[in-house]
Image (cartoon, rainbow, N blue to C red; front, side, top):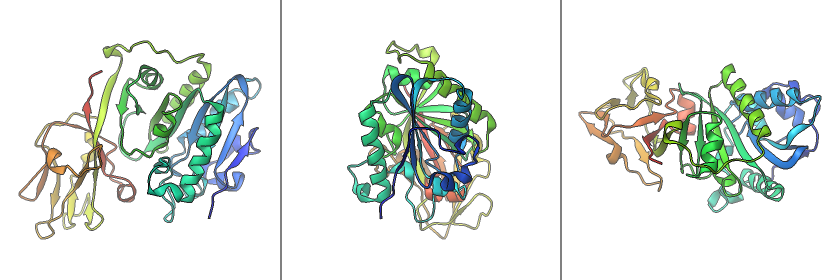
Length: 338
């Protein structure tokens, strides 16, 4: 079964004022909206790849309303992605893969309808030669607003710094939109705070407006003092066979209830992360950039306690158990010299 990509060359009726839950009925599926501006090379913007993260939609609505009575400074192509999940405010539907893990065409997922949809988007945008790519997200944990990049390149640095001094460089997961588009233009992922964070919407709107005004993205070097650059070195997940909780210490794995406060803080070696039930022999997975399970490099396990083996900075720690099952518990980062 294929997923049809809708294409528009003008703003669809009702799009400027709809809620994310109304997108599916309004657009009848994933859609690419191409709008002409003074400069023909388009800015590519992807929104609601995760249906419960609507900050991108509301930022784009603010942007288009701001230019209702004038021509956009630059053309823009807006990819409105998982509208069916947005209808029920879910990251993804139970039968769906994660839309933002479908952009790598060389793996075993490339025959899935969702992967073919992303290939179609890529084909269309490759012909249009995008100026830059911006993928807008929210998150469930207590995190600041920050930008992510996938190449250590001055144009990527400058594009990210327009949004935040805090920049995260990552290579896993390797099937995300920003990595796919990094092969044709500077690309960033924006993390706009928690879901329903109005300041994140305004921040994303101001960023998009600033990008539309750019004539070029400079390749000049970035000063070390201008950027806090972190490298995501590992992903922490909970194996499917184990139960876990943040409030019930009888489960297989019991996490520290206040663990979210560690996000974007450098925490020392020896910090307690979780307890393993003495009868269950539960463990955590820690995958590096090669997708190898290297938990022993980062965690010490003794007396049924998981503690950090080295000083690290976590990001995207969440206590939302559904999100943890669908994605991960968190990422582990180190400061990156540049």
